Image (cartoon, rainbow, N blue to C red; front, side, top):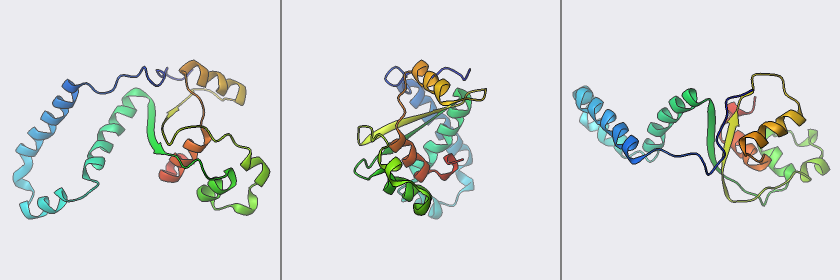
Length: 156
């Protein structure tokens, strides 16, 4: 069985102490190696809008390796029909059955945390449903497709 994942709402986020420790570690490295980075270019990098997200991505990757889970937060457009959503992911409009795609459950909420977990065995739909239940999770195809659009490596 895959590693257990606490249900959403029961997962404790980083503590203030952990945040301070992380900042202290980063600050120490900047002080140690700051002389290696030209100030003019550092100033330009500090103006990058995505810098904080990129730094967080490094920490997130390490935490996911240790925890055996992957969590992605997405903003979900639930106004799209299933076919439009799948076409935006795949571009395979002629291969998508319109009726089946438009019957996909739309789920709820404009923003969602999507939890990915791995099972250490072959799985079918019935067993997968039980794995979701064991973790207190509810599948949300719209949110998962948004993760796939934002991160194409999740498509495989």
